[in-house]
Length: 241
Image 1: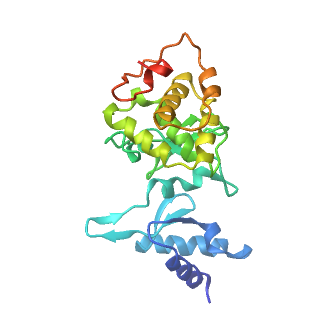
Image 2: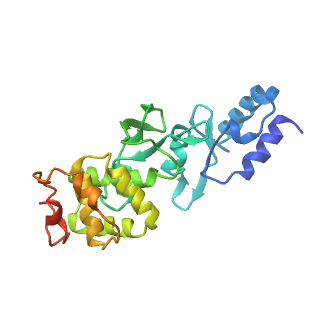
């Protein structure tokens, strides 16, 4: 079997609108040059589309036209290093997914602890922000939730009456162990995040002690988040106004 045939078969086994690179093609050391030519032929035929150098996908056709891979698939090469997650999508795109805004960004934000990730290709434009803690496969969703709390007042067209239930639902759905992890990560975030998380957990009748979270706050501080006790009953207990 030629390298071209081998690649075509492997690509057909990859789901549509899932990104892939050379590492998914199980190439022998001497096959990379032939593989590059085969992939270029498939790209010209429209069988695959290129996202960035060395990264492709099989387009899925729907009644509305071609469906591109989702953000996680498009950005996957940048979110991992040596098979380990080092970054995650944050900002307006994430807040849209959470239901906090209807706006869709033209430029994505990628958060990472130690690596500044900027992307400017035909398919992707992304800017870098620094995460507050090291990123892993186990914690990136929790960090995204804390990011949304941090940026709450800056999220375009956010409705606080809708936002608070969204946060409560997201936190309430977490297993107890992850709720405890959320508190631990929050200690690395600005005080307004810790205060909001404390009020949300108190409203959810979180059964564990919240003393560490409360003691991390300056008792003289007030947090102007535009949230009243009508929207979040425990807000006054955490100096949120």
